[in-house]
Amino acid sequence: MPGRTRLGARRVKLGPQQRGERGSTQAAPGSISRTVPALPLTTYVVTYKLAGNTGAAPVVKTGEVRVNGALIDDLTFDTTGRGPRDMGWEQRTAYFTTVLDTSATLTLTSTTTGLHGPAVDDVTIRSCLLVLCLHKGTQLSPHSR
Image (cartoon, rainbow, N blue to C red; front, side, top):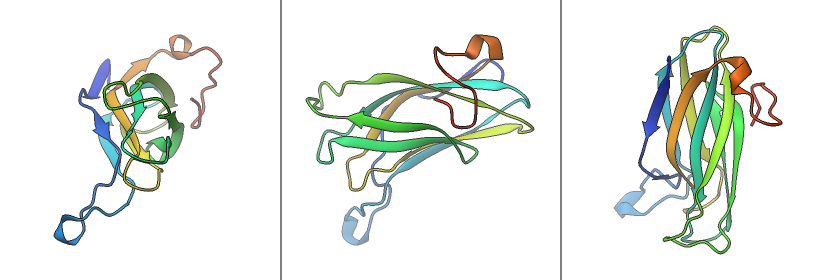
């Protein structure tokens, strides 16, 4: 995966993804995933925008960002004072390093109970030199932010 991979430029709400009988929505948290090619022993930076669905409680939306099942970032967004026209999008960054993997599956999952979880937009993954990837105060590990 040399260079930059854009996973989508459309906003996605991580709400329930299943429908019950007669179209009723079940309150199972939603998730999106994408598998992309990767190079072994390479560090990648994931950037995305995060907001929260302002339609209902809880006001604090939570979730996880995982790569190949390993947690690389916790999502937390407070929707207090926000609305559909001003969702308060925040830029987020997370890092991961492949060891022997030739692909990486990035998964963003809501852990918010109910129908109104976090929202994500503009997700990208790009490879970088370890020296140039470091973000102020960031330690590289499977659980770094």
